[in-house]
Image (cartoon, rainbow, N blue to C red; front, side, top):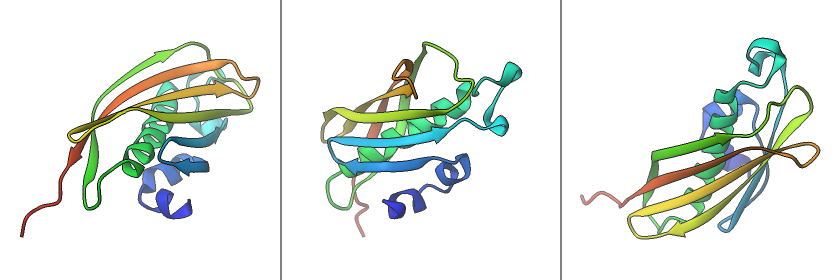
Length: 131
């Protein structure tokens, strides 16, 4: 799993940890830290979105055909509550793994299991380049 995070230096910089990574489900965690917060000590929405985008990108990557690459082409986020301590747990699952797009839903919850955010992203499948 460390190899997957090595492909995404920003995810490492963010402090993201991978717990499990399979094509049908990717799990990770992001600890609350003051440097990841906005006013009032609430975990910044951008940090949550980056965490979810990273989980979703790994999930899409694990569903790619051999030799293909992926990139996010669309993302929609719904925030439900703020996080003021503890950690955020994330689960990304593919909703659709097609030949040209992969759609992934990432659900983020706080340490008490309450939903923090839901992110749905669309990833383009980019075939291998011809020589």
